Image (cartoon, rainbow, N blue to C red; front, side, top):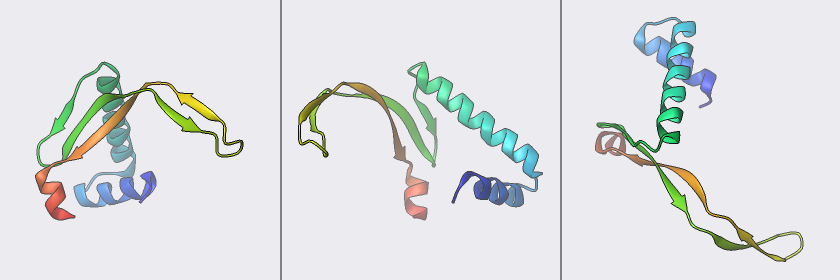
Length: 89
């Protein structure tokens, strides 16, 4: 499912217009992004939680040349599904 299909499904389920649903989804994505950038953790009971963690520096290999490279540490977003979401799947 892509973003457009998600908006269509959400609008149909909530009885909202697609335009209002798109605004809501864009606002949700923006707020989550800003909160994660600030180092906050977001928990949605039953759905799951979003958090940021550091992935340490590691050694990788260039697949074209086979040369060993160092991949620097960086922040990554993690999502852990909540119990209700896990049961639905």
